[in-house]
Length: 492
Image (cartoon, rainbow, N blue to C red):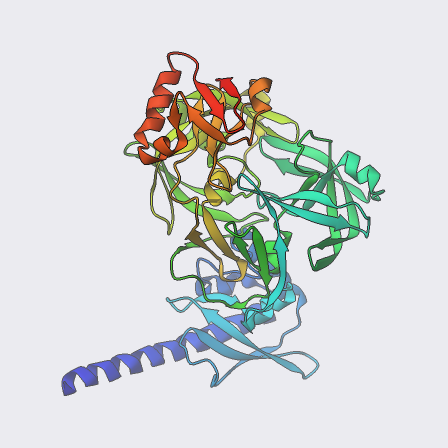
């Protein structure tokens, strides 16, 4: 027992000594970088997920360079940290040319490298409180996984229905609505959309209100009018970058907190994320066909009405359309007027780092050729709301993670396709036709609950999930009869 205690004490002393040396090294390298106006000496002490205000990779490096070049610091002095009883922080005194100083915590990864520095985060508007405080609760309409807010712009009395779209950065409305609100055009810009780029107009310095939350100095992109009957536009990552964001699909409410210590639900999975530019990326592995895996970084996209889409460069690089994958059909992906041919089917497996493997999940593969090949996104695809909405979420940009908690849709089967009609479970766990872009008479029945398919009740489909495959197999021989809850019948 005595020998064991001695080993424990020796290990603790070695760990403390290593931490002291590492702290001195970090303090020295920070001072050297600011005196020389050169961030290169810091690279060896930055962790792989080093962030500034939640931004990682290239975006964090850009902000680091800006801080080193523009923020006046003459020295860093290590202080004894009596409040933080952990080996994962260093307390530094930051001296300025005018004989004043700040203090800041440096947060370290498990291998003793810099994860983030409170002072740097504050310079870019992100401040962590000891405990996360609730700032606003915003009800939303759940449209089969799509989150729709009511938003007011510049005190105009008309409420707008905006899609909460984390696959976009900022805010956008269609041009007819912009004219009605008399928005002032400030500039033009090129915007990246799925499938290519598009020139847009931008209105700056607007005020918006969502529930009991008011935001000033908002830029609003203006896109060509679209025929989406549910929405007038979208709001992107603006909220996620300002607040710790809790999305509860079961209760149709979003809670916004100041960043700080927050206890996640015990049942769930925490997934690492990155923010290399303007969009959240999640690492994952796609097994399109058995034993053929492809790694990628996928956009976290609450505005996309699919489970997963793989972008053209990723599809071509991994030869996915000639790999043994058997598409169930072909359609088009439409993003602000850009149409891209897309092949859909089911993947053998899809594993998001931190989540259980998803087997036989629907996936779409983007095709295209010619001039369309100029589109070359850095991400490999995007994860849409048909997958995301199976979980309640806590999106924590400050800590570089999302916590996924299974909700009432988690156990429901994945969407399935009969000819060109996509069927799946809505926010009330009712089976509905989600879309049928090829046939208007069927698309007009979108969102109406289904009672039976070829005489099989929805309960039968859920009781024996192999019945869904039987329906799909029957559809290959002819049309399928669908009875809706309103008593009407469809042949699809």
